[in-house]
Image (cartoon, rainbow, N blue to C red; front, side, top):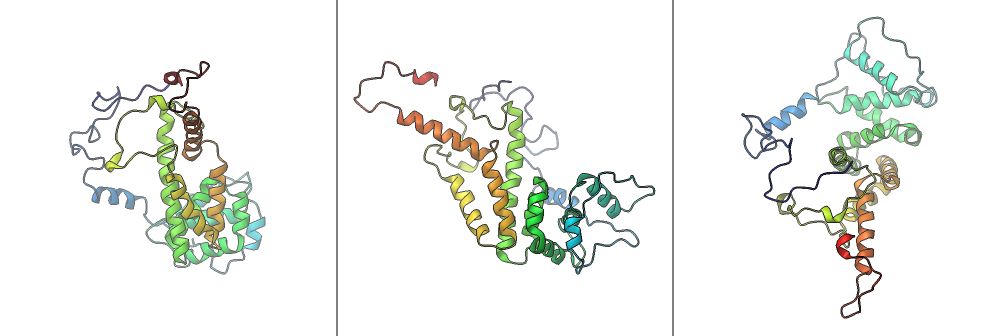
Length: 292
Protein backbone atom coordinates (compact mmCIF):
# COMPACT_ATOMS: atom_id res chain seq x y z
CA UNK A 1 0.00 0.00 0.00
CA UNK A 2 1.41 3.40 -0.97
CA UNK A 3 0.79 6.40 1.25
CA UNK A 4 -0.62 9.49 -0.37
CA UNK A 5 1.72 12.44 -0.79
CA UNK A 6 1.40 14.78 2.21
CA UNK A 7 -0.45 18.02 1.60
CA UNK A 8 1.63 21.20 1.46
CA UNK A 9 0.95 24.07 3.85
CA UNK A 10 -2.17 25.92 2.83
CA UNK A 11 -3.54 23.03 0.72
CA UNK A 12 -7.03 21.70 1.41
CA UNK A 13 -7.24 18.91 3.97
CA UNK A 14 -7.18 15.32 2.63
CA UNK A 15 -10.52 13.62 2.07
CA UNK A 16 -11.82 12.25 5.37
CA UNK A 17 -9.74 14.61 7.51
CA UNK A 18 -11.44 15.83 10.68
CA UNK A 19 -12.00 19.61 10.68
CA UNK A 20 -10.37 21.77 13.33
CA UNK A 21 -12.21 21.51 16.62
CA UNK A 22 -13.14 17.86 16.09
CA UNK A 23 -15.88 18.51 13.50
CA UNK A 24 -18.56 19.07 16.18
CA UNK A 25 -20.72 22.21 16.33
CA UNK A 26 -20.02 22.66 20.07
CA UNK A 27 -16.25 22.30 19.70
CA UNK A 28 -14.16 25.45 20.07
CA UNK A 29 -12.39 26.18 16.76
CA UNK A 30 -8.71 25.40 16.82
CA UNK A 31 -8.69 23.46 20.09
CA UNK A 32 -7.83 19.78 20.23
CA UNK A 33 -9.46 19.47 23.67
CA UNK A 34 -12.24 22.06 24.11
CA UNK A 35 -12.68 23.09 27.73
CA UNK A 36 -9.17 21.99 28.72
CA UNK A 37 -7.74 21.51 31.23
CA UNK A 38 -10.94 20.69 33.13
CA UNK A 39 -12.32 18.35 30.44
CA UNK A 40 -9.01 16.52 30.07
CA UNK A 41 -8.60 15.99 33.82
CA UNK A 42 -12.23 14.86 34.16
CA UNK A 43 -11.78 12.25 31.41
CA UNK A 44 -8.52 11.06 33.02
CA UNK A 45 -10.14 10.75 36.45
CA UNK A 46 -12.97 8.58 35.08
CA UNK A 47 -10.45 5.80 34.50
CA UNK A 48 -9.02 6.18 38.00
CA UNK A 49 -12.06 5.09 39.97
CA UNK A 50 -10.97 2.75 42.80
CA UNK A 51 -11.38 -1.00 42.38
CA UNK A 52 -14.59 -2.16 44.05
CA UNK A 53 -14.15 -5.04 46.51
CA UNK A 54 -16.90 -7.45 47.59
CA UNK A 55 -17.46 -9.02 50.99
CA UNK A 56 -14.39 -11.03 51.95
CA UNK A 57 -12.31 -9.65 49.05
CA UNK A 58 -8.84 -8.31 49.79
CA UNK A 59 -5.38 -8.07 48.33
CA UNK A 60 -2.90 -10.57 49.76
CA UNK A 61 -1.27 -9.24 52.95
CA UNK A 62 2.10 -7.49 52.89
CA UNK A 63 3.89 -10.48 54.46
CA UNK A 64 2.64 -12.93 51.79
CA UNK A 65 5.18 -15.65 50.96
CA UNK A 66 6.17 -14.73 47.41
CA UNK A 67 8.46 -17.70 46.72
CA UNK A 68 5.68 -20.19 45.80
CA UNK A 69 4.01 -17.55 43.61
CA UNK A 70 7.22 -17.23 41.60
CA UNK A 71 7.16 -20.93 40.66
CA UNK A 72 3.47 -21.93 40.60
CA UNK A 73 1.96 -21.35 37.16
CA UNK A 74 -1.51 -20.03 36.31
CA UNK A 75 -3.40 -22.90 34.61
CA UNK A 76 -4.59 -22.59 31.01
CA UNK A 77 -7.96 -24.21 31.80
CA UNK A 78 -9.31 -21.52 34.09
CA UNK A 79 -13.04 -22.32 34.58
CA UNK A 80 -15.73 -19.75 33.91
CA UNK A 81 -17.27 -18.25 37.04
CA UNK A 82 -20.40 -20.01 38.25
CA UNK A 83 -21.76 -17.01 40.15
CA UNK A 84 -21.83 -13.25 39.94
CA UNK A 85 -18.42 -11.84 40.80
CA UNK A 86 -17.47 -8.60 42.50
CA UNK A 87 -15.54 -6.16 40.28
CA UNK A 88 -12.32 -7.19 42.07
CA UNK A 89 -12.96 -10.92 41.58
CA UNK A 90 -13.99 -10.42 37.94
CA UNK A 91 -10.78 -8.49 37.23
CA UNK A 92 -8.77 -11.28 38.86
CA UNK A 93 -10.51 -13.84 36.66
CA UNK A 94 -9.86 -11.77 33.51
CA UNK A 95 -6.20 -11.41 34.44
CA UNK A 96 -5.87 -15.15 35.05
CA UNK A 97 -7.15 -15.79 31.52
CA UNK A 98 -4.74 -13.24 30.06
CA UNK A 99 -1.72 -14.47 32.03
CA UNK A 100 -2.32 -18.21 31.73
CA UNK A 101 1.00 -20.06 31.78
CA UNK A 102 2.73 -17.24 33.67
CA UNK A 103 3.75 -17.55 37.35
CA UNK A 104 1.14 -16.63 39.94
CA UNK A 105 3.45 -13.77 40.84
CA UNK A 106 2.57 -12.17 37.49
CA UNK A 107 -1.07 -12.15 38.58
CA UNK A 108 -0.21 -10.51 41.89
CA UNK A 109 1.88 -7.88 40.09
CA UNK A 110 -0.95 -7.20 37.64
CA UNK A 111 -3.70 -6.82 40.25
CA UNK A 112 -1.44 -4.53 42.28
CA UNK A 113 -0.90 -2.36 39.20
CA UNK A 114 -4.66 -2.26 38.54
CA UNK A 115 -5.12 -0.92 42.07
CA UNK A 116 -2.16 1.44 42.14
CA UNK A 117 -3.08 3.25 38.91
CA UNK A 118 -6.34 4.37 40.58
CA UNK A 119 -6.85 7.42 42.80
CA UNK A 120 -7.08 5.27 45.95
CA UNK A 121 -6.06 1.74 46.88
CA UNK A 122 -5.41 -0.50 49.91
CA UNK A 123 -2.78 1.01 52.18
CA UNK A 124 -0.26 -1.81 51.85
CA UNK A 125 -0.46 -2.07 48.02
CA UNK A 126 2.60 0.15 47.29
CA UNK A 127 4.82 -1.72 49.74
CA UNK A 128 3.70 -5.10 48.38
CA UNK A 129 4.38 -3.99 44.80
CA UNK A 130 7.87 -2.86 45.79
CA UNK A 131 8.47 -6.18 47.59
CA UNK A 132 7.54 -8.09 44.45
CA UNK A 133 10.12 -6.19 42.38
CA UNK A 134 12.83 -6.14 45.03
CA UNK A 135 12.66 -9.88 45.63
CA UNK A 136 11.58 -11.28 42.26
CA UNK A 137 12.15 -8.58 39.66
CA UNK A 138 14.54 -10.74 37.65
CA UNK A 139 11.96 -13.55 37.43
CA UNK A 140 9.25 -11.19 36.20
CA UNK A 141 11.55 -9.53 33.65
CA UNK A 142 12.18 -12.94 32.07
CA UNK A 143 8.53 -13.97 31.94
CA UNK A 144 6.15 -11.01 31.75
CA UNK A 145 4.77 -9.85 28.38
CA UNK A 146 6.09 -6.47 27.24
CA UNK A 147 2.91 -4.56 28.02
CA UNK A 148 3.01 -5.66 31.67
CA UNK A 149 6.68 -4.76 31.92
CA UNK A 150 5.83 -1.27 30.68
CA UNK A 151 2.87 -1.02 33.07
CA UNK A 152 5.17 -2.05 35.91
CA UNK A 153 7.81 0.61 35.24
CA UNK A 154 5.08 3.25 34.84
CA UNK A 155 3.72 2.26 38.27
CA UNK A 156 7.09 3.07 39.81
CA UNK A 157 6.41 6.65 38.69
CA UNK A 158 3.34 6.66 40.95
CA UNK A 159 4.53 4.74 44.03
CA UNK A 160 8.31 4.47 43.87
CA UNK A 161 9.88 4.79 47.32
CA UNK A 162 12.76 6.99 46.12
CA UNK A 163 12.94 10.06 43.92
CA UNK A 164 15.08 8.14 41.42
CA UNK A 165 12.47 5.37 41.08
CA UNK A 166 9.70 7.91 40.54
CA UNK A 167 11.75 9.90 38.01
CA UNK A 168 12.58 6.78 36.01
CA UNK A 169 8.95 5.64 36.06
CA UNK A 170 7.61 9.04 34.99
CA UNK A 171 10.21 9.43 32.24
CA UNK A 172 9.40 6.02 30.75
CA UNK A 173 5.68 6.70 31.11
CA UNK A 174 6.06 9.76 28.86
CA UNK A 175 8.42 7.90 26.50
CA UNK A 176 6.31 4.78 25.96
CA UNK A 177 2.94 6.57 26.03
CA UNK A 178 4.11 9.05 23.38
CA UNK A 179 5.58 6.22 21.31
CA UNK A 180 2.28 4.32 21.51
CA UNK A 181 0.37 7.36 20.24
CA UNK A 182 2.83 8.04 17.45
CA UNK A 183 3.34 4.44 16.33
CA UNK A 184 -0.41 3.78 16.34
CA UNK A 185 -1.06 6.84 14.19
CA UNK A 186 1.76 5.84 11.83
CA UNK A 187 0.01 2.56 10.98
CA UNK A 188 -2.47 4.63 8.96
CA UNK A 189 0.37 5.66 6.64
CA UNK A 190 0.33 2.18 5.10
CA UNK A 191 4.03 1.71 5.76
CA UNK A 192 5.19 -1.24 7.90
CA UNK A 193 6.83 -0.38 11.22
CA UNK A 194 10.36 -1.03 9.94
CA UNK A 195 10.00 0.99 6.70
CA UNK A 196 11.82 4.32 6.47
CA UNK A 197 9.96 7.22 4.86
CA UNK A 198 11.45 8.55 1.64
CA UNK A 199 12.96 11.97 2.25
CA UNK A 200 11.65 13.39 -1.03
CA UNK A 201 8.11 13.12 0.40
CA UNK A 202 8.89 15.57 3.19
CA UNK A 203 6.39 18.42 3.36
CA UNK A 204 7.15 22.00 4.36
CA UNK A 205 4.97 22.20 7.46
CA UNK A 206 6.61 23.67 10.54
CA UNK A 207 6.65 21.75 13.83
CA UNK A 208 4.27 22.55 16.72
CA UNK A 209 5.05 25.44 19.07
CA UNK A 210 7.74 26.74 16.74
CA UNK A 211 10.11 23.85 17.41
CA UNK A 212 12.98 23.53 14.99
CA UNK A 213 13.16 20.38 12.90
CA UNK A 214 15.25 17.35 13.87
CA UNK A 215 18.56 17.13 12.00
CA UNK A 216 18.73 13.56 10.73
CA UNK A 217 22.41 13.88 9.87
CA UNK A 218 23.82 15.57 12.98
CA UNK A 219 20.83 15.82 15.35
CA UNK A 220 21.24 14.32 18.81
CA UNK A 221 17.69 14.54 20.16
CA UNK A 222 17.35 10.75 20.44
CA UNK A 223 20.58 10.56 22.47
CA UNK A 224 19.49 13.52 24.61
CA UNK A 225 16.19 11.77 25.33
CA UNK A 226 17.41 8.24 26.01
CA UNK A 227 20.83 8.95 27.53
CA UNK A 228 19.77 10.55 30.84
CA UNK A 229 17.07 7.92 31.45
CA UNK A 230 19.46 5.06 30.74
CA UNK A 231 22.21 6.59 32.90
CA UNK A 232 19.92 7.04 35.89
CA UNK A 233 18.41 3.58 35.44
CA UNK A 234 21.84 1.96 35.52
CA UNK A 235 22.42 3.41 39.00
CA UNK A 236 19.03 2.49 40.52
CA UNK A 237 18.81 -1.04 42.04
CA UNK A 238 15.04 -1.74 42.00
CA UNK A 239 13.30 0.06 39.12
CA UNK A 240 16.59 0.50 37.26
CA UNK A 241 17.07 -3.09 36.05
CA UNK A 242 13.51 -3.15 34.68
CA UNK A 243 14.03 0.19 32.93
CA UNK A 244 17.33 -0.98 31.41
CA UNK A 245 15.68 -4.23 30.28
CA UNK A 246 12.94 -2.29 28.47
CA UNK A 247 15.41 0.13 26.87
CA UNK A 248 17.54 -2.80 25.69
CA UNK A 249 14.47 -4.45 24.16
CA UNK A 250 13.56 -1.17 22.50
CA UNK A 251 17.12 -0.89 21.17
CA UNK A 252 16.85 -4.37 19.62
CA UNK A 253 13.37 -3.83 18.13
CA UNK A 254 13.58 -3.09 14.37
CA UNK A 255 10.17 -1.41 14.09
CA UNK A 256 10.16 1.85 16.03
CA UNK A 257 10.93 5.53 15.49
CA UNK A 258 14.41 5.33 16.98
CA UNK A 259 15.53 2.59 14.59
CA UNK A 260 13.97 4.43 11.64
CA UNK A 261 15.65 7.76 12.36
CA UNK A 262 18.99 6.02 12.82
CA UNK A 263 18.51 4.38 9.41
CA UNK A 264 17.56 7.71 7.88
CA UNK A 265 20.64 9.28 9.46
CA UNK A 266 22.87 6.65 7.85
CA UNK A 267 21.19 7.04 4.46
CA UNK A 268 21.53 10.81 4.57
CA UNK A 269 25.16 10.63 5.71
CA UNK A 270 26.00 8.32 2.81
CA UNK A 271 24.29 10.67 0.37
CA UNK A 272 26.12 13.69 1.76
CA UNK A 273 29.47 11.88 1.79
CA UNK A 274 28.95 10.81 -1.81
CA UNK A 275 28.41 14.36 -3.06
CA UNK A 276 31.25 15.64 -5.27
CA UNK A 277 33.56 18.17 -3.68
CA UNK A 278 33.27 21.77 -4.96
CA UNK A 279 35.12 22.11 -8.26
CA UNK A 280 35.44 18.33 -8.77
CA UNK A 281 34.39 16.80 -12.09
CA UNK A 282 30.99 15.03 -11.88
CA UNK A 283 31.01 11.24 -11.72
CA UNK A 284 29.45 10.03 -15.02
CA UNK A 285 28.18 6.89 -13.28
CA UNK A 286 26.55 8.66 -10.36
CA UNK A 287 22.73 8.62 -10.18
CA UNK A 288 20.70 11.77 -10.69
CA UNK A 289 20.34 13.24 -7.17
CA UNK A 290 16.78 14.20 -8.00
CA UNK A 291 15.78 10.52 -8.26
CA UNK A 292 17.35 9.18 -5.04
